[in-house]
Image (cartoon, rainbow, N blue to C red; front, side, top):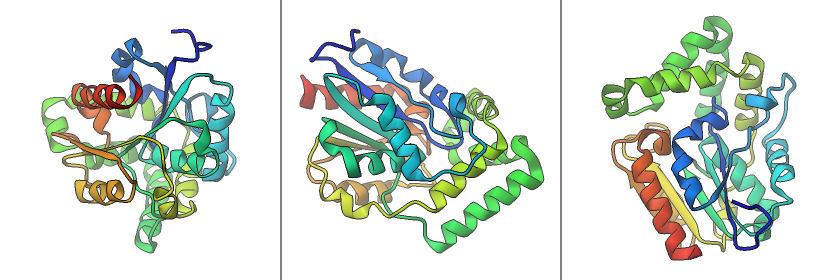
Length: 251
């Protein structure tokens, strides 16, 4: 697909923690309809950094990567990627034509969540990457995914092990210190799709319902059988709702 065509639809999908752009590997069938762009966030993949950074820095890094795009642009993010997407929108909403928020929230960390992030860093330092990631994904993926597709845990763990410990710790601290984006939700004026997982223990369906209720005119979809990585756990379901969203808003 030619990126210089004004009618091209670019779908920018920002990965979640503790992964990189490879978490979107099952979304390749969408390439028939849109130009897929998968940025690596600072601390991940080709941007593994050992220095500390903020969520605002992560947002500007992504914006620098996509600012030359022509045509229609849909910004998407999952979990941490959703936090980044909202910070991008806070400054650059006029650049985008659509939004897809997956398994994420707009609020800042509460004190208990901040404490849990400190525990996560402690676990990383004391137990090492392998043990930390095994426990993390067993909690984040749904029991359905773990039972019917155990290879998906192995795949995510393999991707996550491509990052370095320092980069993941920097991402945890960036998430912990991120600003509250709740006030932004009522200002979103582009077509928006909100996606959750039926069995997501981190951002459960009730929270996704609340998020969608604050984005005027948004469409909410809960993917059956999925946990926190819903497009990865139920890719066929995700593709169906995304293609429907595209048909309704970008045909």
